[in-house]
Image (cartoon, rainbow, N blue to C red):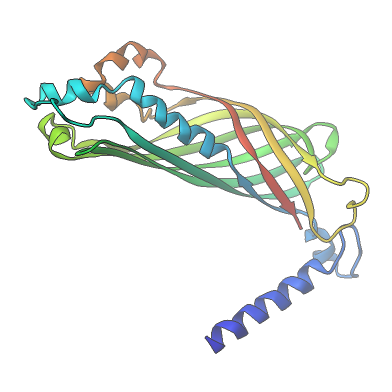
Length: 253
């Protein structure tokens, strides 16, 4: 415990020294003056919104029908669905120029649909490498257009006697790569009073993220009999279309 406290004190001390310099304040060291104010760390709550769409799977999954297809009897069985979904995204951006940043996004989401005997769970790890081009040379704040290359590692599993009876205990375990374009803006909070603060705060909102999956993660699910109704959408499996993919905050230091 003592070593842990000492380590925490050292980290806080170093952090205090790092953030002691206000944005725009000169130190006399050319490298430090260049680096200060160009790093940004962000938290994106958008994945929670899209993880929540997992709940809509209940519209396509008929648990009652799945049990009957497996030879089971639904009489007196509680088939009401219980479900949850949650996700977060994290990002690091660096602003080498006054009109652009380069960055990395990575996140996670998890969810589960559960009945009395069975459950279907999923987990994803989305990531992307990106460049943000800011209008009117206001990087890292303002409107931006961001081309990106990324991927989504996806895993969906089913557990329970009725799920296994239908042969879908392992629904899918794979990933996909995509190319896309994101449009949004980063709004600087307290632009006047906090113009020279050691740490500046921004609000991130993206309108859309449109792209194309080079290796679509969605296609194998069409081979599962219980999801055959989705086969009519197979043509669109390669299309990436997210509305409001980014809703979060960014710290600039």
